[in-house]
Every structure is written in structure tokens, then in C-alpha cells.
Image (tube, rainbow, N blue to C red; front, side, top):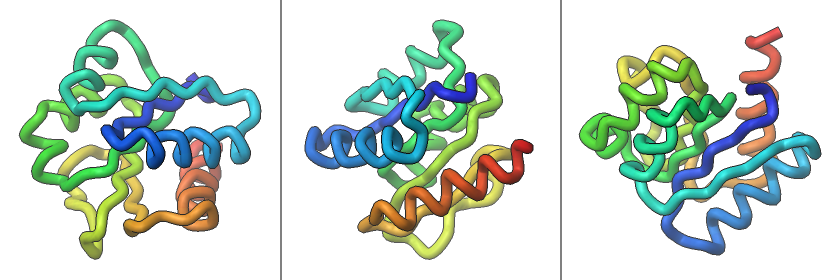
Length: 119
């Protein structure tokens, strides 16, 4: 579980950037990219249990799609990337917010904060 990451992003360049940053942060990472929250829900319901689910989107869309329930059931961390000031704390129990547009430093900082909590 520690090395599995799920990226939910429909823009290929952004998804590739996220995947590269994850690879730099954790060279042993296995990154799966899906284009929609629905695809992510399907993957999570198939016993796929990533450590992190990175989503570029709003808390409302994560909740409406059922992704928040799937993330909670899988006990994964939600890394929510959006331009809002903060994510909704009631979305999932384990989450961090990364301001959009993200940078390598901001995403790495968020992943490090999760890693520190998990130790």
C-alpha cells in the first residue's frame, strides 16, 4: 500500500506532472492515472488500495461522485488540489489540501506531511 498512488486528472499534461513529482518523491511508487472520478471509484471498489488519491477538483465534486466514500472505505489519503482556500474537513477523515496551481515543492510538502503522520 505504501507505494501505490492514484491520480485523478483529465488533463494529460497535469497528470504527467503529478506522476513525475510522485516519482521524484518516492522512486518506488506505482502510479495509476485515471481521467474521471467515476473511474477512480470503480478502481477503488476493485480492491485497489492506494496510499494516496490525488484529485484536482472541488470538494463538492469529490462528494457528489461518490469518490469521498470510496476513499474513506479504502482508508487512503485524499490529496485535494484546487484553488479554494481549504478543503472540507468532513469530506474524508484523512486528507490534505494543496493549492492550485501546485508546484513540486507544494505537492512534496503535502506528501511529506502525510508520511510523517503515518510513522
